[in-house]
Image (cartoon, helix red, strand yellow):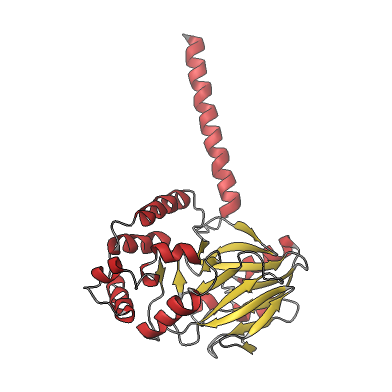
Length: 305
């Protein structure tokens, strides 16, 4: 009986120690300062992308050319974490890619430029962006080492919003697009400074034209909220329900749900499915995709699902 009790105590202690170990491992990844998601490393053809959580639900991205180890940072709102990561990865940071001027994306630019010992090229499409020294527009190009970057002008959330499409030097592999607050997984940004026509052009013309296997790295961890609305729009879309379950599992471990792909967004994102009969029916039967876009955004702005 004593032996049985001892085994029970031993098992309980082992279980608690195991749970504590995994909590410590999570803290090592998430950080004691309370990051909303774990740090993750994504390898694509010719490039590596470090997913860096920031603020309450933002993402910054460190893009590294695998061969030259040159790097660029997307929306560095928390400069200290950027610098720490650059030093740990032993890469050469020389560019900042800013998607838009809002504080939670561009608010760290000036501090990063001040703290960084070498000159930084700061790209963006809006004069309201702090420390901007390279203003870009549609189809402008730049490089990160051997990586090719094409700028996509996607005004609507803000008038100067830019998405950055990054591919390997030889054009092989899936490539990546950094979409800020234009395209989210399962959703899109609010139309603060634009129109349904502009968001339609951004999502359904420019971004939809990228290869379907292009990885989408968006500016916020909004997946579960967005997919809830997507399910509301298309309750019989099984792909949406499967993604919700997958995202719940990821978020339970504080793992990021990014990236998705352009092809996947076409299967579940209502704002990229405005030509679909099921989405049009939800929007009151309108068949004009731009009208559907406007109707969906207006509904999403007050959606509480």
